[in-house]
Amino acid sequence: MTLKKLTLNRNQKGFTLIELMIVIAIIGILAAIAIPNFIAYRNKSFCSAAESDANAVAAAVADYFSIPTHTGIATADLSITGTGDNTWVLAAANPNTAITITVTDGSQRCPTEYKTANPINSKGDGWSGGALHTYQKVLSLD
Image (cartoon, rainbow, N blue to C red; front, side):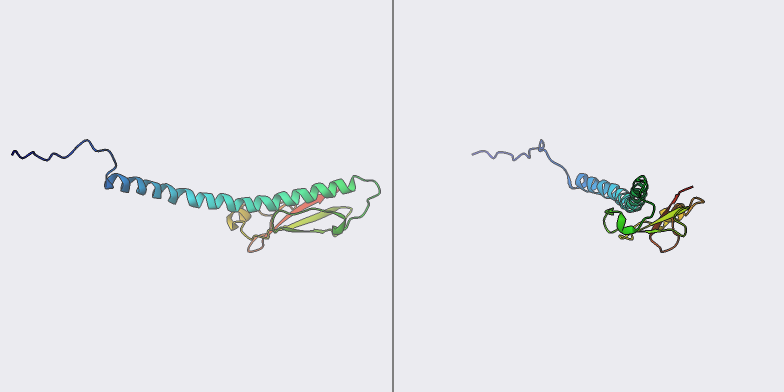
């Protein structure tokens, strides 16, 4: 009786533990870079939603005044649905001169860096500073 030598099949296919660990490390590094960027873009979308709501209210006010018999306006005269939790208010010291639209970001997730980079400008449009979550747009009727 002869003894046969056992030979290991060196032609096996698969990944080694080191290769799998390297791939997982690379995925972790990519996730560490991508996730904060995604969160920042998502939070900026809350700012854009408030600004978009202000523009929609401004368009509705302009549409309302395009009818000759409409000479005064009340908030109840407009039917605008805000984005998410956003609320808006119309105010005018002199409605024949300017109407101020103030939209409050109900989510309160608009980043402070974005708001401070876009403060209220000379026309009256922009974000209120600090912890306030309000965007203001002024319609000049001159």
